[in-house]
Image (tube, rainbow, N blue to C red; front, side):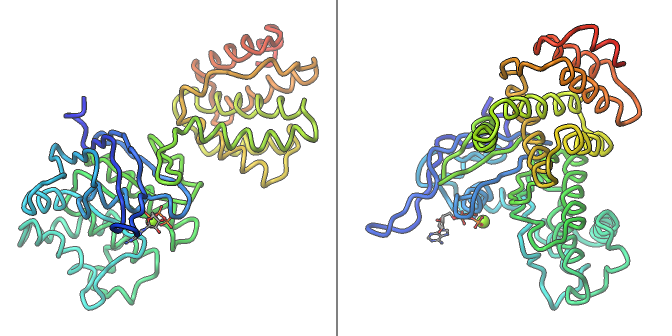
Length: 366
Ligand SMILES: Nc1ncnc2c1ncn2[C@@H]1O[C@H](COP(=O)(O)OP(=O)(O)OP(=O)(O)O)[C@@H](O)[C@H]1O
Ligand SMILES: [Mg+2]
């Protein structure tokens, strides 16, 4: 299995410094990433995200464990082999890293020169990638003539023009406003899907977690499973809530996850379903805006932890009135995007059964 993965890490540890100053920052990291997969790497500041990215990018090497990238073991690899690997990786940095004295066209061209693409093929590829990132009209401008978001997109064009097998992006949205951040990430996502690249994206921005196929979370240099992380986040919130009202804590947890299950039943969530979830959480569950966003965030993450989608909640002891509301809300989510799919209906019925809701209530609310 390890052999087919684009990136395979086994028991990877990394230490900075020597002797008395030695400090271990990564511990026993194990993971595999396939082509076409978009992985988001999250974690607090100093948890080791950038260090891990530079290990995978062949920019430094681990003291322990195995880092295999594109089939090449990086440990003890020759400089020549490392360069070969690096050339198949597109790096997107937090700051765009463009050269100020070169135009956008020339900045992108540099990446192609490294792999020996010249002449008409080079200019065709540059035009195509700048078109993709919406910079066709800015080709001959200098970085200082562009906005922050445009520079960031130019950096992405440069990283992707080689159609790299792997894209490593370290906080590509950090200096952007909400909308440009979203655009940049969706752009990376589209390009990755088209070219089948494996993408690792470091971010602190919870609003973009939903583009990920998988979320990896680092804490103090150790990989934590998403299920652990979600349940920690959820239980912290529910502990607080329980102090006020144990019944509503239980109800809210069940309710939120049931909404998320319906929204995700057909494999993707539309904006209208998202909006409907927000409305229901606000109006039916009477949550404040910040609480709604928190629940939405948990739900997005919950989607990734597919195994965590199984109902683990005890029957929330819904009274008749609440049970009706509960089911109505589930149907509202299913209908938010203008149609109710078979999967969504099946999911609602499964939830009704799991939670012991009256069967007839489920079919009547249709
Ligand atoms: N060149 C270095 N020499 C010594 N220690 C370093 C060096 N670079 C990073 N560290 C330490 O390694 C740990 C992990 O750093 P890293 O940059 O990987 O964190 P990060 O998760 O990317 O954080 P951030 O979110 O702030 O970018 C930190 O404790 C940091 O202080
Ligand atoms: Mg970092």
